[in-house]
Image 1 (tube, helix red, strand yellow):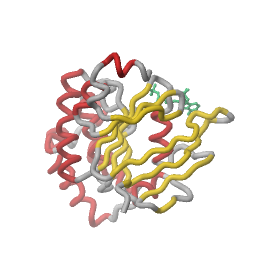
Image 2 (cartoon, helix red, strand yellow):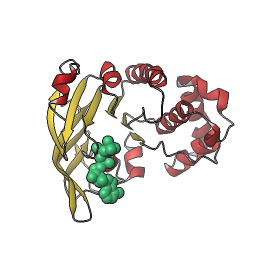
Image 3 (tube, helix red, strand yellow):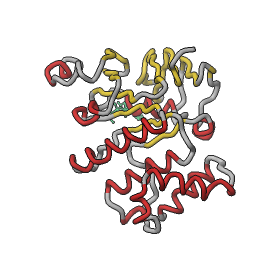
Image 4 (spheres, protein in one colour):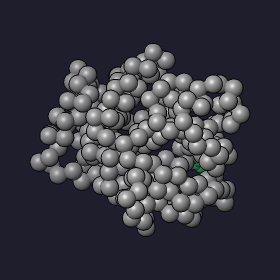
Length: 237
Ligand SMILES: Nc1ncnc2c1ncn2[C@@H]1O[C@H](COP(=O)(O)OP(=O)(O)OP(=O)(O)O)[C@@H](O)[C@H]1O
């Protein structure tokens, strides 16, 4: 059996007439952190969003557990075990953490009787959320909001998290403090994570493999060690 949880073959995605991803192929393996790096506008967010069914593809295949998906769309992807932590965190500032969690479970058809148990499970993984659980998201710090966004993705009990630039808006120290628990969580739950990150130095510390994207194509696959030298990394940008 292949170790790929998600396989992408010759994916083609565009906006209007403009092609943004052209013939992109990759595997996200079970139980790994796969870091995706590349210049601004390379197409990283577009790839994550198309994997979650938010952007439709013009060609190519996406498979999970070797099964081709005909029409990936967010509810189906959540049911298949894929969670998205979007770039803007995607949380409504006027809602409390509890309301954000309930809304997410309603949107992904988690039965009412299971909801409290799922929230308790997520709180056992990210216990700091208890200290601001009844607050409106707009009053939380960037780090707290990021934690809520990750927790919300976990509510669907994913096997794979797609994380889009979790460092955005966070002080470097705060981002470092967030990454280690993410790595622990990944190992504890044997999750796969596709991590898009500009703060490569920190991201590489928690990654198993790296893909470099340039202008809508994957141009290199390597280990984080190879790209630890900034001069080597810059060759690919
Ligand atoms: N909704 C959209 N409509 C039209 N064009 C878009 C849309 N979203 C992204 N693009 C364009 O697609 C290209 C790839 O953008 P994308 O956000 O996927 O890149 P990225 O690698 O994630 O960049 P960044 O690191 O800046 O987030 C860019 O040229 C961008 O302007």
